[in-house]
Amino acid sequence: MDNIMKRTLLFAMAAATMMSACGGSDSKSKGNATVSDSTEVRTVECVASGDVVYIDLDYIMASSKLYASEGKSLEAKVKSFEEKSITTQEGWAKKEQSLAAEYNKLQADAAKLEQDYAKGLITTLNAQQKQEELQTKGNSIQSRMTALQNTVQSEGQKLQEEERALGEEQMVLMNKFQNLTRRAIDQINADHRYKMILNAVSVVDSDPTLNISDIILKKVDELYTADNSAE
Image 1: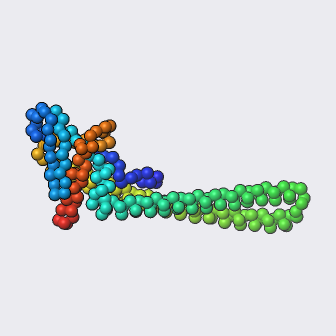
Image 2 (image 1 turned 30 degrees about the vertical axis):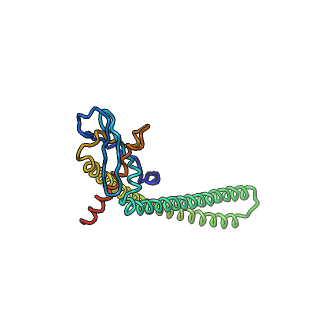
Image 3 (image 1 turned 120 degrees about the vertical axis):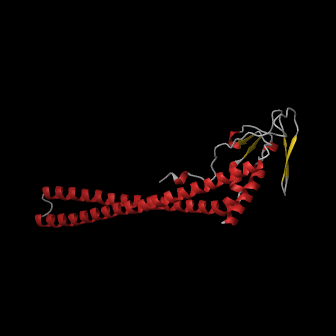
């Protein structure tokens, strides 16, 4: 049940890589390739062998309309589940500890009763009465232990089902993001202006102008809006 608690919606995905050209596949000298959109024009400096740019998938996801519309609410549901799961399991543990303490005291009382009777410090009648009282307490403890075990089993299954459902929702969300990102990259790079598009997690050092995340983000948002309008 701890798996979903450690998950995050903004995890690094596999590197998106594709081959294309920068101003033509035969380009051998440096030049400038421009990407125009309605809000911004990005200029990417071409290296001798052609463009190699990168995108930050975590940034795109966190800034996307998909995340604002579906990701945030799912994150809230996951957080709520985590808190409920922790509180529930802590409650079970406290009840179990309390019952264990009662049982240990009962065992100690039974041992003392036996010792007192052996020493002649208590009559047979009183010993029998106390023994019956201890037996009644023992039955009560056993009954509550059984009830707790049944509760843990039934509520635990419900928590597991809820965890699986949330995990499926997370998978669907990430599949949507992957689909939107793949389509956005295909459309942005339809003219093969970039020879290679890397995932930022694979980039050790780079010129910030090679980051085309905002270009991809804009297209991802356009596709998301179009998809929702078509439904």
